[in-house]
Image (cartoon, rainbow, N blue to C red):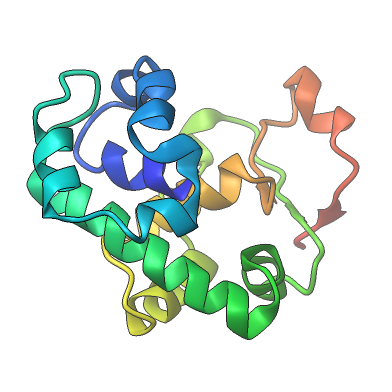
Length: 158
């Protein structure tokens, strides 16, 4: 998921979602061990793949981030344990009434971004981290009138 969030930087999310299947194929089913071993030859191959965003920095970042992901896995036993540690394994349930009230980033996404960057990750700004937090369920930003809001059994952040 973090690969797709990084690829989305500066683009619309729908652009990336349309290419999700191709991204999965291009990046070894998102296997971090395999992606971490990509060579310049793989970068060149990816730069020719019209099914993904052909941005050299984003491609190189994906390879780098796979390496850093593995380092975190080793340190925390899993990336899941690392990322959920920021919220003590308890998802945040926000109470937004309107989409316009949902922030692009928060103090927590700032903290996660800063820590990931300290660990050598790229393309993990606070906005990308917040989108990742939403995507993996760390934060529930469904508006209070959304049918999904009540279906999520989460704790309140207030």
